[in-house]
Image 1 (cartoon, one colour):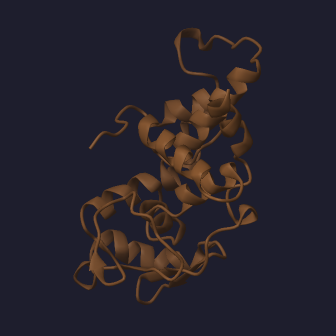
Image 2: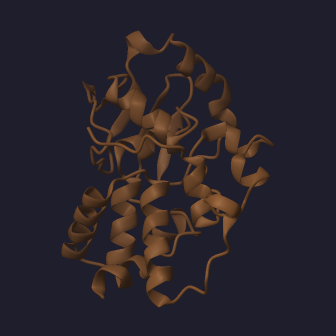
Image 3: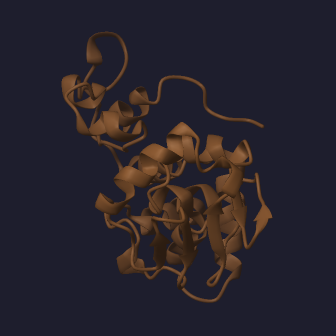
Amino acid sequence: MARYTASVCRLCRREGAKLFLKGSRCYTKKCSFERRPSPPGQHAVRRRKVGDFGLQLREKQKVRRVYQVLERQFKNYFEEAGSRPGVTGENLLRILELRLDNAVYRMGFTSSRAQARQLVTHGHFSVNGRSTNIPSYQLKPGDRVEVRESHRTREPFKLAAEQIRSRQVPEWLSVDAAKLAGAVVDAPRRDQMPLDLNEQLVVEYYSR
């Protein structure tokens, strides 16, 4: 399985924004972006003025990196979004939000999408009662996600059970903290998805 293995803090610095890729560390003074917000590279050379294509490229990279999806899979998601009825950009974000690893993160079972991906891959979660180890699994309204009963006593989930009540869960999800379970109530609307992402620039990038 292909995945990005270099420093994720460089990605935040390259995009000029906090992407919250390292979970709780991103909220502390240890955050690399807080300590050194300049772009990566020798001497932190200032970038030239960015044109339309540059803005589109950077936004596409930002969305892709937030959800930690590689290029080919991201393009496939875009093509799928374009084939669905409705607004292509919103469809794209909806597909990304309904990935199993993202839903696990949104429910508060993990502190980052990277941790969610790892725990899903290791078989700690089930969907509708069936063990599922595919991070990209597409959830649908009505699907129930839960930590498998034999895994609930493990350290990451004991910590999650203590912290989950203080996490804000999106309206399109419901969570039962006592049972370490959650469900997809409905497909997310645009106002229930990240507002700091400009999906129209991604559409323009692929439509050029």
